[in-house]
Image 1 (cartoon, rainbow, N blue to C red):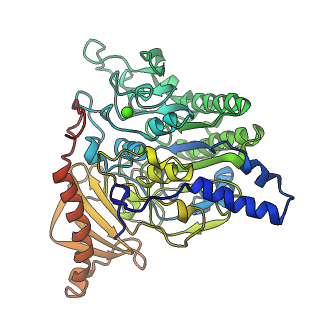
Image 2: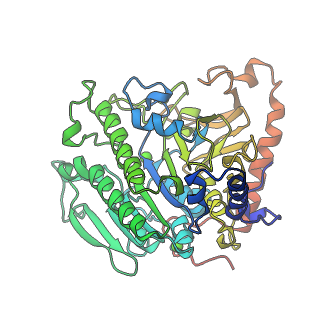
Length: 487
Ligand SMILES: [Ca+2]
Ligand SMILES: [Ca+2]
């Protein structure tokens, strides 16, 4: 079983340095490429992470959507496309996992909190933005935060030099349009902005009108940030957390009606356009070869609405432990460093970005040693030094419960739910599926085969026992609590 970074004994030499040696060798052999010369520069690579909200595996045309997404399809061909990219099953936990490299339940962020519930990552969490900021990067976040709505837990408190967007989720925009809304009881939602070391400030009311144009604002701010930092020649990290494709499904005005297939499809085209604007900005700024571009969803499309959204060939969606709930589109591009045109079905997790990014830029010594990690370093896999991913399992929590464990191509379910609004079923004997040959998880093996797949419980229980042991040593942080560290 692969160990997450906390228990790695071996020190990794800076992959960034190693990569430069490889490039230096290539340069000696062939002095012709300006790309390699660019990479010889002393700068660290820029990092652009575009996150799409509630994005079904099948919501892009390269993965079967009938709505064209040419910009995204083209990007996928320029780097690695993960067909087995796994996320947590809701907005808040995935955003937490990306930022901390830790299972969200460790951070008290295992579910979307209802208004009024204690919530938000403790400032103690060391985010990827904290790490990159400490490594000298300019950092910015534009869009939806959703991992803390109080001062002290906002993006400018968690490693970002600046931010603009919403504290919570897009549905906030519809609150004031309900007939019963009472601003005496619930603060009118706002779009906010802030700078590191200062208190965040209200920008404007976040209502349906503001909702429709929010993603175009996110893109405009992201491209402006890219341009100004490229001009300075200093490394930067920008996290563009688009707020679509999430209810309320209101396309920006120039996309309303564009698909002739409804608002959801209009927004699929809008997402493609917006991603394309960021890709174009990177190219125009002349920093394409020195920029790591990551594009993923945060969770699957919901299946309780009739609005649209496809989770591809997989069963289930948002809030389920089925493959349709854990897989979203995922791709990464880093010209000259990461192979182009590669499609892989190796298992990759949103948890892995934290350790992988730290290693890719040679800053892994900044990863704290005082906490348990679930992030696996995948740098060698991305750089093509190995064919296999370092990860062979995914543990899917829905709220506080382990719903399922995927191990290699087998999947074990302890609890199942068919969708967000359906009841949760607990199984006396866990259900076992072969997702490679049965992507729709229809043929349960334990019962059908008379227990012949029971052996899979050994690796699965070993994974869960290891997690339990680590949680006994490092108790999980209670949602919203003032956690200050392990003694
Ligand atoms: Ca989401
Ligand atoms: Ca922090």
